[in-house]
Image 1 (cartoon, chains in turn brown, red):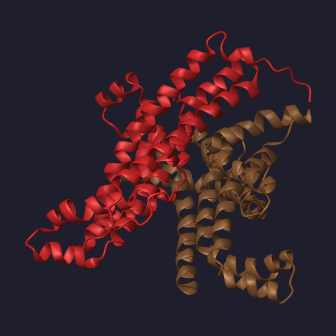
Image 2 (image 1 turned 120 degrees about the horizontal axis):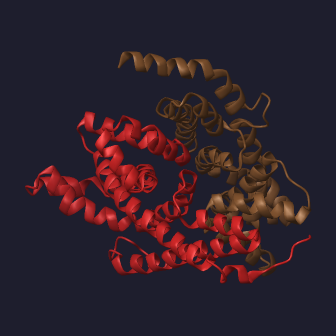
Image 3 (image 1 turned 90 degrees about the horizontal axis):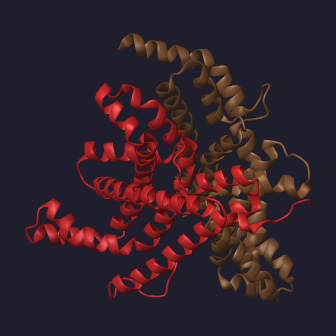
Length: 228
Length: 240
């Protein structure tokens, strides 16, 4: 029993550089990394999400309806399906092969923007109506009202749900391993193929994911208390 | 774009049969995992609100650890990691009876149970404390108070967020393809592999998911209106 635990720890220890530096951070001979995928996906997804969220509130039906269809469509489809769409269809459209990194990044941005768009919409709707009226009365244009008055206040209200969605996205990046992107999960699979220690290896990466996501959720709770 | 569409691949050959069997496996997997998740969610969600500290700690550990780790990792863990530790007899039986399916049910159920638990906990906590006090004052034990007073109200209050979680569970069942459970996404890929018609295959799979999700969402909003507690849930038409 003790021997087997010790040898399990030894397997983790010997492969720690590969798991963490290659798989988690993304430096090494493979193009990969959980962090290298998660951070741009969150930033770009949020930027697209702002447009989607504001589009849902646009006065013009020609903007509102497409934005609503976008949100309802992506919220009704599994992420795995969206990844396969990107994986198979984008190379057909562009007529050349696309590296896994860009496939995965595109899929995450497009998919998460639907969820982030709903958060943006809820945030904007939570800003008191009087703020918009006051800004208009002061002579600000609609764009300026949105950029300088509504969005900054909305952002403050959005912070807790944004962090929650960041946690979801961080966990979702593990699905990039399905198309062969070398993230933490794929790195563990590669090591396991050589070592055949699935219990220890998958439990170890579970703990790594947990440490990251749980500290994010503690942060969210703190921010919630401060903004409340 | 250099691609010739051939939609007939969806109804010629075995495609239709694959899609149908994939749909059935997706529904079976989701239904079994849902039952497990709801049971785990109710128990751990209720335990997180009790006074006794050790019970609360166990439930908190379960919820935080399982919902904060990607489902894919849990799939691999239950499918590859756990079986080697089981007794020879059980292992033999499981390999003969669709190990990947049961590992998928367990992974999806235990993961979603942690998420359901949070939904139920916030439902219980939204019930005024006085309800519990009144129940105990009228002579009910803690268990009876939960069983007859708190849970019946909480379960009806949480229908909208629980619907959301159920839809997440259905969509998340697609992750089971990684441990080769022959569910809908798996079959969609199989059609792609055999016919080399990616767009047609993915369209079929995507449409089935959309119909399932939208159908389930509208059914649940009907249930929500039917079970609304007068005076507690204000507007019947509130969705999401």
